[in-house]
Image 1 (cartoon, rainbow, N blue to C red):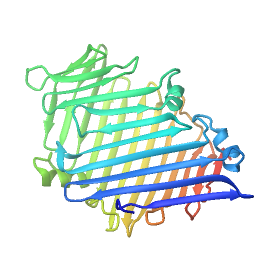
Image 2 (tube, helix red, strand yellow):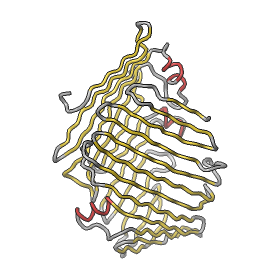
Image 3 (cartoon, rainbow, N blue to C red):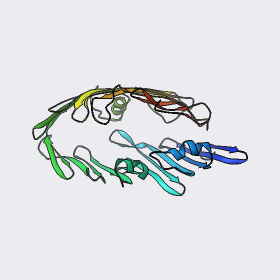
Image 4 (tube, helix red, strand yellow):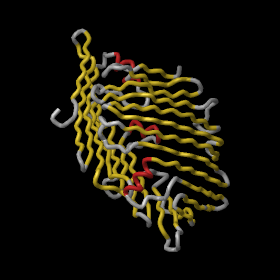
Length: 356
């Protein structure tokens, strides 16, 4: 289209009567200063259609609808950065039958940074009556970091220098929680925090020295291996996170690829003994995005406790030119599969498995 994007429309009728209609429209800006992608979509569903009767009307956490429209916008500044990352924002809005159902804003393009989510259907399941979540983060590098929220039990925290060497104070919900010193080297950070009779000693190591300029920051972020070890009175953690990727240029036609791996083993009062692993690879070429994401997780106690490890497998492709999603998104809990399987063909309904 005229805005460097695509327009897609799908209409399904039965006996001359419209069952559902889907329209997509995208816009794209990609130049030396910025990358911007905008998606407009609309779905109109006849309440007599199979789609409405078998899927939409059966929603457990979301609200059913006859007409849903949405707009999503993602922006990255190629010219401006916050410390080491480019400034960006993501925002979106979803309307259902004329009423606002969801609105999202996540931005580092302004100070303080913001995350705002209006989603009554989702947040009401977290806390009855909750309609929106708001988080702001003000960062003064080397001096302070402050987060504020609209949550009832957690209103935020503040970490700031006291003026005595590397000593910092930590405040939570406006009250002083802990004070501690730390040691920072070119490739490690360690500290000891004491709260009453409890203590925590985390140590984080990484490859190479901390970035001092743009070139070093780029190399640090494109490939690294981070190890976290935590010892404490009630908690232990052994975690490794490593990744490697090509430099993204936001041009989905040129080849890009990457991989990331996370492995963690630990113990805490809430979960008991636990383990978690995630492995992901992705590649982009000729306007096709391919992602493989697998993992295992097991917790000895709490709401996430299961008899066998929870399996995760997301394997999919996005064909940008055809506006098509192909692949399977699967979770297996206690041997039962929960999945969505999207066959080839834009607009083709996915196969849904719930607890088989």
